[in-house]
Amino acid sequence: MIVTEKENYTILADEEDGVKSFASFLDFIIPKAHSDKNLVIDLLKYEKLNLEELLYFLPISNQQRAAQKSFVIANKGVHIDGVPEEVMVVPTLGEAKDVIELEEIQRDLGF
Image (cartoon, rainbow, N blue to C red; front, side, top):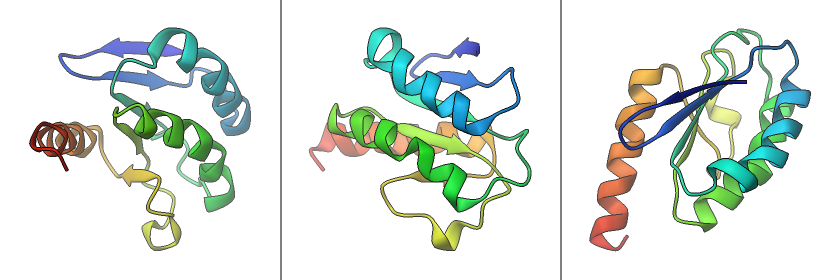
């Protein structure tokens, strides 16, 4: 896993080739090392990601959001219309940063 620390979030990227195994690894490692951070999951290399594969990340997304932390997936392959609202998917890392900033503002305002 490639970890990139930013000012108010951390980017986690897969250095292997397997969406399901990466999701399983994140399910294990996030509670131990990253649960207190806003997270961007960089899946940009998976250009043919489908909804079923994306849903592997749903439990982790729910855990992070329950802890009042952002969880944003960066991927261009999945069609956004079929994605459940519990999973935030954006097409670029720049947009992921913007989403985290907006969610931080909303949390500060009590939304």
